Image: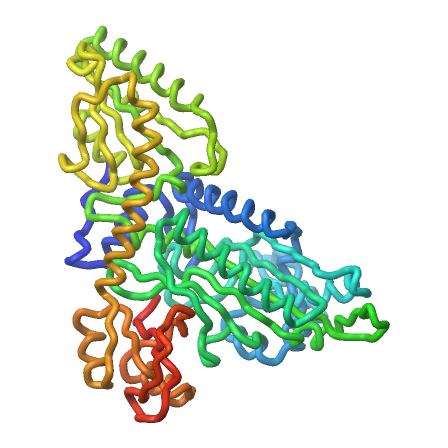
Length: 503
């Protein structure tokens, strides 16, 4: 049974953890900083995977898999990457254990590796070492590869889904014959991520480049999608990096051009992770539990048959099974990724109706259908939508014959409502500020996305971050063409950038 969820207004961090626990999404493992993703949480990740995988393949990409272990010398070849990830790397130095009497199981000192191995924090180095053998001619390009994998980054402070030592993700790594093609690829993937975030997660995002101080180690520049959570902090939800020729030069990946010359390949890399599940929770959920956009919901509809007598139970259960059959046989469409609607029947007659309803609300099932003897006598049911908890979301007396059509329309309505609600919230918590004093005051109350002028220097960016803990989230593509003065130094500014505190 679900436990009480801490209200958002009382303790946002605990509210988040309560939802992860009560919705049975994940739990901490016995390995510090790592998590066990439970079936309900993993089902959301699977739906994310399938949708994104289809989008990657529709844009010409294919999947492959590369080793978990990376020789230390590979990481050292790209100076910026080596420096950027050095403090987060898990290092393997030995390959064997042995039992020593009186000491038990110990590392065998004779089994030391000639070269330490790094458990992959990201795969650019091992992949570009491999690409040296794959790319010889312009005919081998473009090379558009994605992999679904796990990575390890040794985090000191962890939070389920948002920041863990091991997490799941996809990482794309592409090679191109020209700079123009590679830059187009980076923008194509950014648009894939934006579309997925907004159309599937119902999570509005800003898009644009990161500053040089915030870009990916080894990249010429990084493009990102940034979302606002309900505590008004930003979440970097996805990144697409234009790597220039940096990795091709580090690993000597050259190809023969059509003109017969030798040139280094141009590269991109890009990725999103299980952090998206944390973003989904914090964008939509409420004090009753998880709210899940229908397109990513593990269960779309739960039918709750009701009754006290054996006959009433049998009749309502039969009606529930008939309804389930009609729903799962509906034509598959793009909205649910051409997959069947997932319908669950709650057969727990030993629990009170209230307990059963609460369980499904906590898990975020978009639609609940209640069927009792009185309803069935009139060939009707009660329809409850999760985006409006309690009585507000209930419709009584819905004819059973209308249910298939009503359910499909309602799923789409919920999806749209969640996006519109999140966008309205973000826009209401976005402010233009024109002085550093105003910036610091608004950052604390009410908080949110602050659009401010910045002089473009790393020194000013770092000063603001040190003094306020706010960072530049992105330089939005949709910013107004407006010159101004930096709010800190008074120097010329080419346009406003977005600051926020972040995860």
